[in-house]
Length: 254
Image (cartoon, rainbow, N blue to C red; front, side, top):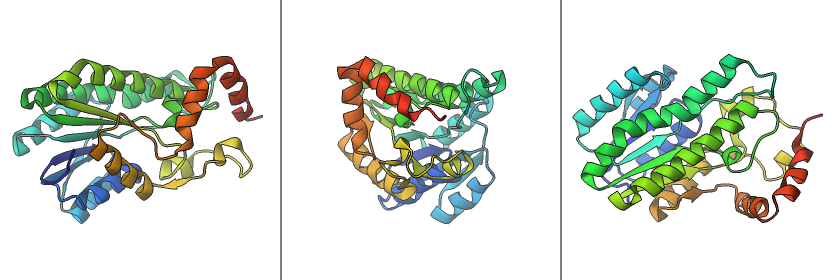
């Protein structure tokens, strides 16, 4: 997809990858950029790029749906939707029900709420792009963050299903799956030590991830993998699941 003159919506647009996407998309001369976030900083970011900000909780189906319909009414055609909002849930079986619920609502249901509105809209236009920020945790896993990894797997399954079900109607779907990215989410979580296996592929800047995303959208690739080694890890996983699980146990924090 060429982003010139396109109408774009980004959730989680107040900081991190969402903010970087908005700033990078601006270089592609879109028609409009709409940023959605529960963080009031969304208004500042939107103003800085000449876009429009919306203070919305994407876990609130009614509020989110109203906002998306409001944007459709304003611009008539939503060409690219970046379902980027997400939260990280740490813990294993000790994670609380509230943690599981919030991860499920934001990391999975928010994509569904958006798809219910935007996929029919895009299908009617026989064109449109739905991008889901999944993270490599959805392709591989993340010990110590069971709610996060589990819901990201669900988000990947949803994206695959959307691509299969609606691809023949002109709708493109991609999943953005980076490993560690220099964002507030990473900084406020428990960073692994420099010698931890998770660190060997490095921490990418949000700007680099945004640039890789633009390239992936232009090529209309389903898998957008800013960390190049992730593809090899996926291939190893499918080739020998038992060996992959044994190797992944090295990631378990003692």
